[in-house]
Length: 248
Image 1: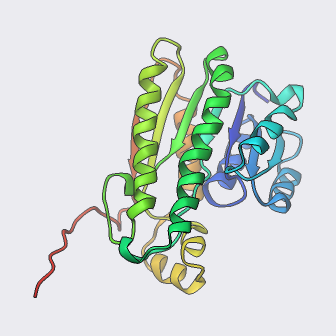
Image 2 (image 1 turned 45 degrees about the vertical axis):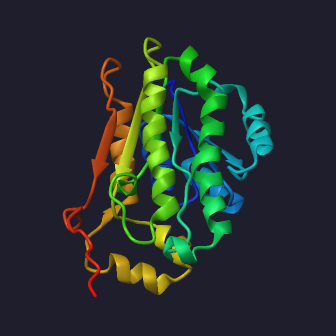
Image 3 (image 1 turned 90 degrees about the vertical axis):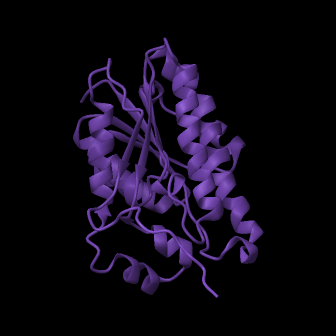
């Protein structure tokens, strides 16, 4: 084992779950967070004593405080924060969207992320650590129905650049990872439909959670004098081509 510890939010599925496995296999101590305690416990049982799980909702700041305060001594020295927890809800155009869904995306993708980051910054500065934020290609390329989800990911992208500026001189590295299509539970959560998820990913050869996890590990283990500011990834089958034109 190394003496490095990573805290990964949203470790109950998809990219976060794959990242927990990848970092543990590379010898890191792993703190995995998420709402679904049963999934976290199963993952911790699989990985073993290298992983410590914290079950809470990212929208609950008091729960974040309580969880961080409960960390065992060997997990308190956090070297890397991976802000992965996030979600998209709904595909309706803005004029038909559910305001509650908009608020939930903002509370999770923005408010929860900045709260966790703010609380861990002193430790990360002390240990000359790193922050990797999961943004999205939706931060750069708008699409119908992306409205608030894309806006939250644009915030994450810009917040990452702002952190990088503020942390100048501390040695703390900050990276925004911006994936395109990754086959996880993302579309199932967004639409509530397994059929919709299967249709989206079917025949597209999308990226996997493991693909992104290996990218995160690569960024985290680069020489300490090298910072990846932003990294955009897409499967070969996906591109940013195509404007829309409405005709009478």
